[in-house]
Amino acid sequence: MPHPGLPRTPPGTGTPNLPGQPLSRPNHPFQEEIPPDVQPEPPLAHCSHIILKMGSLPKRKCSTALAQKCWLHPLPSPHSLAEHRTIPAEHFLPLKAMPALFTSTLSPPYFSFRKSRSARMLCRSSISSWWKSGRSPSCWSCATAAWPRPGSRDVRLSKKRRNLLPNMKKNRGRTGRKRRRKHLKSFMDGVNCSHKLEYIKLQKWLKERGFEGTNLRPAEFWGTGRGLMATKALQAGDLVISLPEKCLLTTGTVLSSCLGGYIVKWKPRVSPLLALCTFLIAEKHAGEKSPWKPYLDVLPKTYTCPACLDHDPLFAENTGTIFNYSALEWAWCTINTRTIYMKHPHRECFSLEPDVYALAPYLDFLNHSPNVQVKAAFNKQTRSYEIRTNSQCKKYQEVFICYGPHDNQRLLLEYGFVAMDNPHSSVYVSAETLLKYFSPLDKQRKAKVAILKDHDFLENLTFGWDGPSWRLLTALKVLSLGADDFACWRRTLLGDVTSARNEQQALDTAAKICHFLIEETQHVLLQISQLKKDKENLKTHLALVEMLRSEDLKILQKSAEILCNLNLATA
Ligand SMILES: C[S@@+](CC[C@H](N)C(=O)[O-])C[C@H]1O[C@@H](n2cnc3c(N)ncnc32)[C@H](O)[C@@H]1O
Picture (cartoon, rainbow, N blue to C red):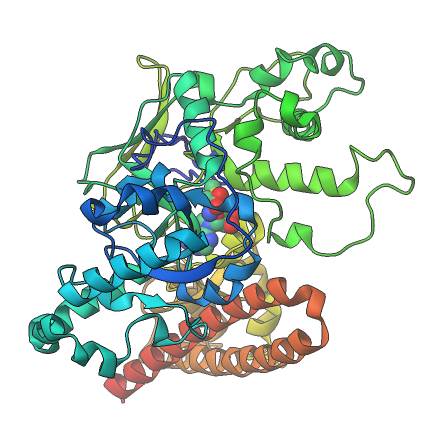
């Protein structure tokens, strides 16, 4: 985000890093139907369970009796079917509260469905009649009574069963296959979660602060977790979101709160970042009394940033139960992963660190993709933080922003995730590794190293998706200069070809280093898989490091392939 990410890329230029930009009100279907104070009636103890695939219940078929006696809970994936029994009763919403579910094919594909005994027969007969009528092409995913095994295809009708349905025969040809593929794809797309109470409350809260609806809604996505889904196709130049100033949480918010009076007196002066952390911790502690509660309720409870790895406590003594290390860690990660970049004038009460953070509720549900471009900035006319996309986004797909042209190491360190096939990623070659490939007996070695150091050519040497970087090759060429052409080092640094021999030697050494790094990375990956078995508590972090190193391996293998092709071409 322009979070810590954003602060690093000034707004309005290139690809702003906006981890947490403000979102407009998601256009969720149940907005009008659910009264804000709706308290779902808990499902009865004696209930039967049915899994319904979206689209299998046409609205007109949803009788009032059924609607009044059933409760639904969306499941993010068929895998969570196994966990349905552990869903707390209060998380179920009455079916009557969301008739719009049945008109939307976008809503979560699976629901845990509970109904009272008296509704059971009605429900079963209704479902079976929809089923048999084959009126809804998606009714093949409806299963009753038997609980499907997680991860299996059994939430759908078995092939045999499907074939028994006369009207489903049309689904067996190419069109049927296409239709099924399309359905399958819809599982892979996001699962709408805008109907969850916490998001409904957040919407209401944002609306009270002047936030108008957008074409986005919160959803759970495979791979990226929670994000925002477009309910309408977005074209390049479209406004993604416009979040009014009133919704932003900045140091101004902190100073105008009751905490402000204390913060201005603190000596030594605190940084804007620490002031924001303190505010977050205090507001979280205030619970129901906090005006920011609807936002705090949707913030992640934990973070995967390496900063959250198990560690010794920062403070030797216990400094209190509220402002303890884990609270600070949570607040710091919230700010580091979710704030947008917004420069505020320096205030005397703060230390000299830049005041560039703003938490942007809802907008901060936007996930990062290295392949999109957005423009993000505070619009002084509308007094809103606005994001415009430069990329297209299809209806019902996840809307991404770009937190900046960060490589995977940076993404992991700052945001706690790794982006697959990140074009900005590269593998670094240390000076130590580089120099291992050159003879210590070379009389000019010392001079060459000094030249590279003076011209800043011993750092940021990388292998990328397109092979060794120009800087790495240049450093290799300088180190490969023979005694007779050493005098040409300036030309070499500028990119001139000194000799075919020098070029070839640099490429050969690059290939050797690349293979060394491939072996090293493979070794590290083995160690990680062993550690994952031994250190259960570090599993999440190790999985991320594993992803990072696997991406490194892919980059190195690609580089090795490029170098091999280059060698073949010059042979
Ligand atoms: C500004 S928040 C985005 C919304 C966040 N997913 C949520 O549920 O609140 C930034 C965090 O989202 C996650 N994230 C963002 N982009 C991601 C991606 N492409 N893949 C996986 N996680 C991502 C990371 O945990 C990151 O720290």
